[in-house]
Structure formats: C-alpha cells, structure tokens
Image (cartoon, rainbow, N blue to C red; front, top):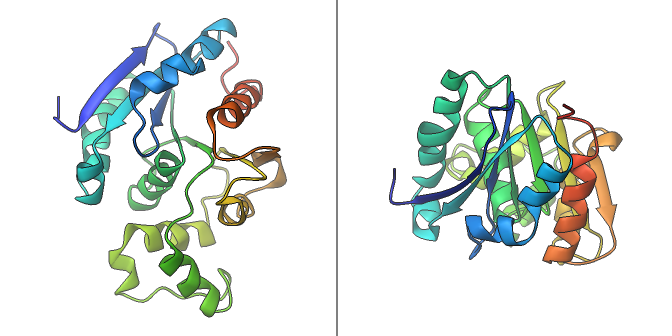
Amino acid sequence: MSAALHIRRQTAGAPNLLVLLPGAYMTADDFVSAGFFAAAARRRLALDLVAVDLDLSAISGGTALPAVHEEILAPARHQGYRKIWLGGISLGGQLALCHAADTPGSVDGLCLLAPYPGSRLTSMAIASAGGLDHWQATPEQLADPEFRMWRWLQRPPTGLPVFVGYGRDDRFAAGMAQIAGQFPPAARHAIPGGHEWPVWQQLWEHFLDLGHFSA
C-alpha cells in the first residue's frame, strides 16, 4: 500500500462500490466517526464503502489520485464491481472531479459534497473570459488540474450519475452552485448551513436515499 493512502473499508460483497476522498486535514476515520458508514449500513444498501486518507503533499505533488486509481479503483474493477462511484467532501470532491476529468470512464458516478471549486485565480480567469460557457482553456492553463476540471465541467458526459450537494451559506457556495449548475436539476441539492459536518451528514443521508444503490 502506498505511503500516501490509509483506508477504512465497509465491505460485504455488494455489487457497487463508493470510494470517499477526504477534505483537507480530514482522515478516513472522520467518515466513520461522522456516521457515514453507519448510515449506509442502516439502509442495507447494495453498497460497499471505502474511505481514504490522502497526504496533502501527495495531492500537491500529483501522486495522490494516481495512487487511488492504481490501488483502489482499478483493482475494484477487476474484482467485478458492477458500478464504481467516486466521491468526496470539499477538496475530496474537487479531486473526484479532477479524476473524472483526467481518467474518462474510470468511474460510474460521482458523489460531491461541498466540492471545492478551486482557487480565486482559477475562478477569475474563467470569469474574465465571460464565464464558463465562453472560456477557452489555454495550453498553459491545462497544465493545472483545476482548469482541466472546469474544462470537463463545460460538457460533462451525458448519462453519468452525479450528486452535488452543498450548504447555501458555505463560503464557497457560489462556486459550488456553478459546479452544480452543469448537471441536471435532479442532481443538485442545496440546504441551509455552511462548510461543516452537520451539513455534509444531511447531504449524505439525502444522497443515500436517492435509490442509486437499492438492494
């Protein structure tokens, strides 16, 4: 196992897998202590869960997502999972989007809780071009995974199941709403609250009740 990854699993041979990526300074254990695993188990869903630790230096160095793919996602595909979803909170949500952008077809759905929309420099560059519909990425920008994420968001794959949930009072809510707006209305869910666990717990419960993983 890579030094960048520490994993918590809840598996029972279900046909579907959801891999959860943490936000900055979060751990895989935080998903457990926040009741994410218990909420899924209580519903008896046809779903195995894996939560991952990601070292910030590995994220900034560009090795974290390749490790997730090589050590979790690709082996899971060979194990015979029918559907493999990738999700995360905050920075983890952004990383899930970045992986979908850079590795087409590697996942079958995305669960994005308060996905971090990126730096001010990224948002300003897109806004100065007249918004996402008018922005055309330069080769220099496409060296940055945040810009590649936004280019992917311009035309997400049709039919890819996605859930985007966030708190309306989140300090990044405007950017999160922009991400959500790239998907059908049924994929979006905004609730009162900020960038905090009580909001993410409510969003997780809502996501689990949508029926993606009914037994």
